[in-house]
Image 1 (tube, rainbow, N blue to C red):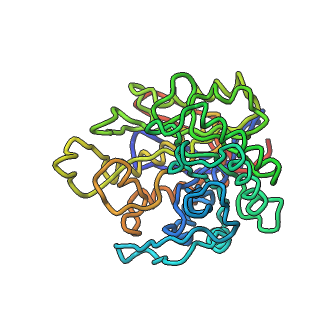
Image 2 (cartoon, rainbow, N blue to C red; image 1 turned 60 degrees about the vertical axis):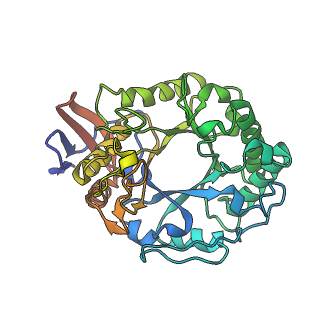
Length: 387
């Protein structure tokens, strides 16, 4: 079976051809099982984003699930702490009552989403935990029993133990390891079928937001997935200027590959997911005190998101989640990364939708041609094609 379909990805530099595949020893995941998006609880409209993917990553706040900032006082699921959240744009749903996780996640499932829950405990600095090992274990076990795929609710298929706990030096590696190991043991005891992810990590010398991958050398039985956050940055503060994903001068691909190589050497069989990558694109000028900040254009954001997914699909990665779903057009770092702007689609929304609708049933087969900073021709095979 040969398809004469070609997808021109908003750029003359990238051409994708879709043809039947030759046999593969280790076939890649279908793109419908690879492409995901980041979201946040009550702000996410599952119906709006359903055409883009069927994998969603939620930032699930630990402090919503314990009472009055007491890490030892778990409220019990599904009702979270009371939040007084109100939108200012007129586009979002107002929410003044405690969040019911069952109702929320079930509404996402109704639109076909598979949910990865990232447990955020950034606000619980080490000094705020009552009994870090016991509280972490208790929470992990209760979460897995209620949300995991073996229980009656079957709401979540994977859980991340922390997001970026190394950020701003909130947790040392040693402190995070105590939480990780105990929460992971709780998850294993609560539902061994619930996949466990590390927090964001990096091989070698980590950046200021990632934990060192070597921290997990002796605990491979406690996790299933290595979790990476990586942005194609030309430079960091104050511009946070980003670039196209294939740009060899920033070694974006090479930075990811280091962690894949670590997996191959130290934890063969574990999956590797990129749970955050993305690009800011705002229509507004930054404030005077943020004047050096640089974003991409709407067109560049659309091009670079699609090209990132394609580059990732060639690598030995198992999933990639885009950051972010929606923004309010704020011209600052991470504040303009949505594929919608005030819940209205950007060009990147349409580009991601076209990619998913065209290639969701296909998997990467091989690189036909690769010339740096010129042309990339990738071959994708339909999931029903014979090996």
